[in-house]
Structure formats: structure tokens, C-alpha cells
Length: 177
Image (cartoon, rainbow, N blue to C red; front, side, top):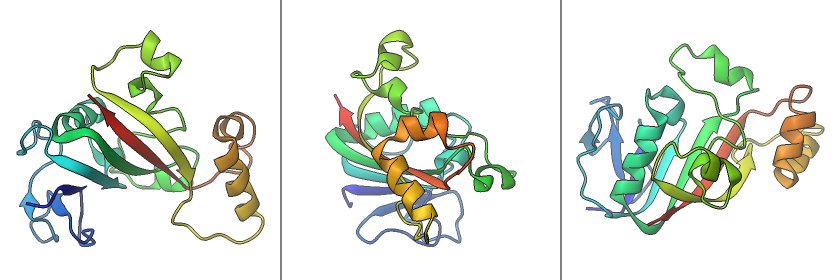
């Protein structure tokens, strides 16, 4: 079994990954409803995991992150792509249950004040990087806004995002066990 996991792979499963999707007509190796916890994988198995535009569709974000923590090895990397909460893409899809900001995963990072104040879960991840519009190629002036947002994500969100909204957030997490 591959040591890389692609949650919600759809018909674009990442090469070399074990794909999981609810749709039996997808490229999934394992057909499984990601809202059905626990996942059918052993503890601390995967060295990396990807969740590309799937987390916003699921009911229990905390539960999914706890499952990722359980099935990923210590120091495993997780890449999560979600629509940015200010993007119109976040709201036009009626199957979206959750919306994400630059600090949405700070509650799982022990170095962040949110994690110390609000212990929603024992699952811990280091938020290593947050990237706006990583896979979206824009033209001027959106390219400048993206550059500024990636340089100062919290400031962008606080002062500019309502005027110049971007489309997608990618979070790079490292499993802490």
C-alpha cells in the first residue's frame, strides 16, 4: 500500500497515492465516505496526505483532522486546499459546509495562542505554511494582491480581503505526536 494518501481524490488521484473517495466511479482505490469515522487505515501509517478541495464538503472538520492525525505518522506532511472564505467560490457550491480563514488551523498548532486557549482537540499539527492561490495563475493586479497576501496573510485578511478577495487557501501542516 502506498504511504501517501489522497482524500477525496475524485477522478484526479495524485500519482503514487492511495486514493479515497465516496464515489465508486472515481479513481479511488478505497471507496469510503469521509464523513464516516474512523477511516479504514492503521495508526501512524501515512507519511503524507492530501485533501484538495474536500474538507469544506465534510460535516466534522475537527473529526477529520483527528483521523488524519491518527493515521499519519509522526512528522508526516499534510497539504489541505480549501476555498478562501471571502471567495465567491466558497459560497456558490451548495454542498459546502465550512469556510476557512488563514487562522482556521491555528487551533491545532501548539505554538499558536488559539491552541492554548481553546483545546477543541488533542490532535496537534504545526502550521508550516499558508499559501493563497497556489495553483491559480492570475494577471496583474491580482498577482500583486496574492504576493502581499502570502507575505502578510493575517494583515491581508484583516485589512484588504474584503476589498480584494482571493480564491483559495493551501495549508501545509506537519503532524506532531
